[in-house]
Length: 385
Figure 1 (tube, helix red, strand yellow):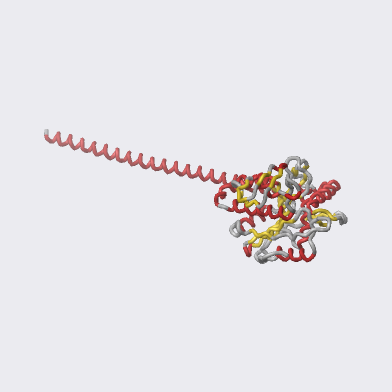
Figure 2: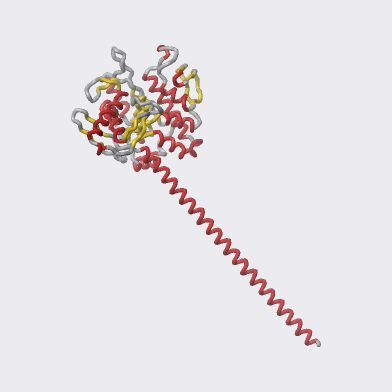
């Protein structure tokens, strides 16, 4: 009887041990399976995240490039009405270490809504000098008298319209020069090749005047200023005088203040005043005001508080400017110089203030020579006589 009980206990213990081993083995298998499932889920999640990031990166690159592509026009055309020579100028080479300074022309044109006079409202040339981390700003008076392609004395702001007429005529004679890509300037629709010819007419005269080679040109719609200033939260300007001009709803009193987009544009363009000619600003004062706006806007854009707005700022710029700088040059300049300049890099070079007996803006030979030296120098000079 005892032997039977012992045998029974042995069987029970054996069965219990087997059950425990089975349970442990099952638990281990379950744990391993759970770990495998968890690992697979993590891998799938990581693959999904990487996929989303790759798609986002591709979209971002496409977005940036497509926006930049919209800005690009053919490199400027040389227009000669007498010899009827129309040729495309070779694209400016990317500067090397031996010749790093650059000249940029910024042309402000009011082509919002019904504006279609095709007169440049502002002309500013930038001499970019990485060696001394400086950008020299020179505003050209819009009423400066120059000689046009026909040998007549005209205001420099009329050269854009003249170039448009010349190249439009050439395009009618030879449609093969057209690109098929158009831009709307007010009520006018221009092929980008015609636009390039219009720009070239002003650019060539400025190169001749200052004895420089302009590397690239940027045509700016005034909406650019309004939208950029609003996007960065306004710019701080020390207004020097009372300004009242009903057509642009500009009503400013002297003092340090933050201007939003429309007021910033009105301040940059201010010349006439509702109260009469004794309140008018000269072309030279206007140039200084434009440079103040450029510097203040640059300070805001360079600031950390706007570092997260790159894509928005890019969209604003791409919708409102045209340039002959190609994609590779833009990329090269950004990667090469993005850490070189800041809001303190800008230096204003004054345009000598001289008038003819009839009150037109002119520049005598000696004053022009001094201006050329100060602007072209890769060093900082204190003043221009």
